[in-house]
Structure formats: structure tokens, C-alpha cells
Length: 400
Ligand SMILES: Cc1ncc(COP(=O)(O)O)c(C=O)c1O
Image (cartoon, rainbow, N blue to C red; front, side):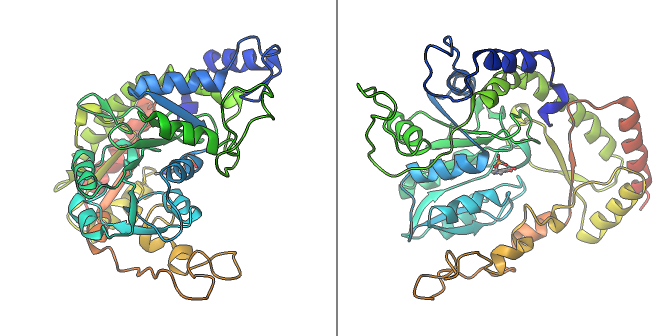
């Protein structure tokens, strides 16, 4: 990752076709666009690639979460369970729907712990969002089984795991719907962009209308502008240039993943020089999209020391326990209830009463896992020189 490493003639050709028509809008202009509908084609091909019936493109992975939750009917007074190791977007979208995020622990998959999920279900739980962090699956079959038992829909946040599978079945197709991000640093990228996939036609139609101001997408004599609306919506529409790049990148996704797998194996071999190292539990190694290599040291002190040496030698790893983008105790704006709303929403009700309090110590099991975890991002292109530098750094760190 990311997919811009392999930008080439394919992306240029797709973009050129759009510019030739002059139509950047995904709808309308039937004569001018000469049959070219890049976003629509991208939706169809991405859904088909994942083995889903429908795809809905939107402006970002964050928007995909928002549109998916809105279509599932999530609103004020509801709770949505996700995990304390994810990108902030997952819970921003929950708040944006008026609901309250509830955080479950992770396990050695670095994704949602199903047993802790079950403990956190209440009568207010309206949806569950497991996140397939860093390219590899959550224990999604167990999670869906628990959710089904309680009659709660699962939205899979697959932002970081396009193309990953379990026994050949794509992540994002296990729950009611799955969301994806194609932002600038994702394996397949459109700069900014997102997608929701589902097998549920009605859910898809709802999403399709919601992301387009609620306009019903029923052909009528008035055409666009003459349509009705069944509910209020918003604008999360993807534009044709993003759809064009998405088509080119989708065509390369399996090759990008294959290259990452090869590079991940080489990095893993190098990491094995460190005594006592263990690796993240990958639910299905064959289906891993191999965007990251996560490994564990015996304790936090050792992890920090090893990383110091790696940094000194130009091959520092990510220590997510200190990461303010992805880890619950580091989200100071969440923990500190920071909001622009004068009345304190979404942390307080209009009458000033607190809706929720977040305790930084609330996820001890996640802390025990992430405190001793180091992570390398796996590039699509890994030159021999860089691999040799990382290997040499790891050799030095092995002596710590
Ligand atoms: C797990 C997760 N969810 C959602 C998003 C949001 O995606 P975007 O950046 O496209 O809004 C990201 C982006 O990094 C992510 O990692």
C-alpha cells in the first residue's frame, strides 16, 4: 500500500475518457457523456469483484459509514458498538447519526473481541461495526452469529481491507453491508472516495437516494429535478474522475495484494531474527491483503526498546499504543468531550445532561495487546536496498 505506487497509463486513459466528454457529474447529461458512466461502472465492477449484488459509491470511507448507518435507520438514542482500535472515522460517523459509540476490546487478531462485544450489547444497540484493521479479518463469522442471535445488523468497516477474504469470501460481504475507503493511502485509491456493498436491494436503494439529497431514483417525466423524496438526505456523491481512477485501480488490486504478500513474507522473515517475537493472529492467511505486518514482543518495555533501535537504524515501526489517530486512550477530543456545538452535543443532551462518559482506562485488554505490538506498513514495491536496511536494523534490534 498505497495504490499510487502503481499509477500508470491505465489511470490516465480512464481519466482522459472522462475529460473528453466534459461530464464530471455521475448523473444526467445523457447526450454529452456518450454512454460513459464511470462511477456507475465502478460500483458494478467493485460489487462484482467482492461477490456482492450492489455497490454504492460515495465521497469517502467516512461518508460510506455515515450512509450505511443512516440507511440502517440508526439515530438519536441508539448505541452502536465498534472497537477501541480503529480510525476516528468509525465513531465520528456514529456520532454524526446522533447515536452513541460503545467501544469493545480487541483480541490477538487486533480486531473486535467477540466475547467482549456480546457483553456490551444492550437493548439500545442498533448496529455493530467490526473493523477489519490493517488489511486482515476480524472474527467476522463469530461476530455475525452473535449479532444475529440478538437481531442486530452488522456493518463491516472494511476501509483498510479491500480485496481481503476468508476462505475466498470477501470481507464486507458477511454483514448486512460493508464499507470501503479509497483515500490517498489505501491499497486501491481514488484520492478520496468510498463504497458500500450489500446484497440487500432495498438497503442499496435507500443508500443510493440518501447520498443524493434523498432524491428518489425513479425515472419520471420531469427527469432529474422532477423527482420526489421519501426522506431527507445529504450530498455524498462520488464524481466521475474518482470513478475512472477506481476502475483502473480495481483492475490492479489482486496484483497489488500479491506483491504485498511477497513483501510481507520477506519482512516477516527479517522480523524473526528477534527472539521471542510472535505475530498477529490472521484468521485466514491466504485471504490476508497483507497491507501490514504486526508483531508482538514479550512486553511493552521490550517493544519500545526494540523500536528505538529500529528508529536509530532508519527502520522504525509504528507503535499504535502511542497513536492518536487509531487508539481509544489517545483520542483526546473524544475523552475530553470536545465539540463545536455550544450545547455540548453529542456528548450532552440539549438539556445539558451528559449522554456518555468515556473512561481512558476502559479497555485494559486492548492496552495489554497494543502495548507490546509493533507494526510495519507493507509497500507494494519493496526494493532490495530498503529490505536490506530493515533486515540490518532488525538484526541490531535482536541484540537488545
Ligand atoms: C478503519 C477506517 N474506517 C474509516 C476510514 C475513513 O476513510 P476515509 O479516509 O476515506 O474517509 C478509514 C481511513 O483511514 C479507516 O482506516
